[in-house]
View 1 (cartoon, rainbow, N blue to C red):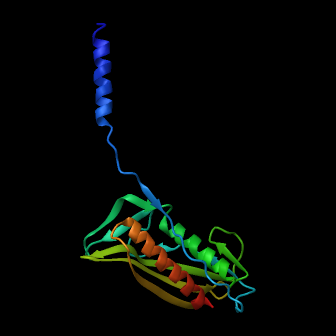
View 2 (view 1 turned 60 degrees about the horizontal axis):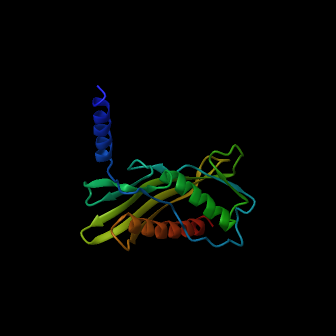
View 3 (view 1 turned 180 degrees about the horizontal axis):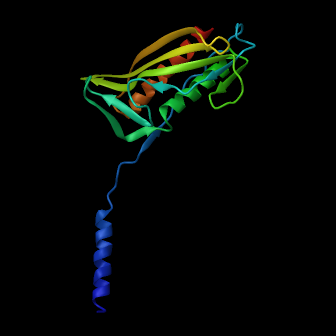
Length: 194
């Protein structure tokens, strides 16, 4: 009976050591955009705006990074992801860009209970890494609606679409190109709202 315990312990330890495999480390990325310029004169200087949570139109928006090799062959990176749900990252980026621009008196998140004069709604049509042969691009397509809270009507709307070449065909290259595209989008959004 005494010989069975050490033998069982040895088998258990060998089994545990044999089962431990090294998984590739999960790489976590975030959006890192260039600052936008401050707007000197704006018709919205005394107004407030609430930036709503961006909605996904075609694909589920999450922390996962999406790629495609054709219009029907899609997947997600297994060892790379965004630091938060991409809708949350985009919302924060849009709030930051509008706040830096000083286009509005105050920029609010949709969780704020404060009343706003305008609401900025956004719909994500595409946010993916598109690889076609040797061509590799970050695709970003987002539509915005500026809504007057007083009338409930759309003041204006526009869809921004960017196709930015990636320096490499991996997730890191996709992130670099996505940051470039979102930087351009932030500047264009401020210019459009102006």
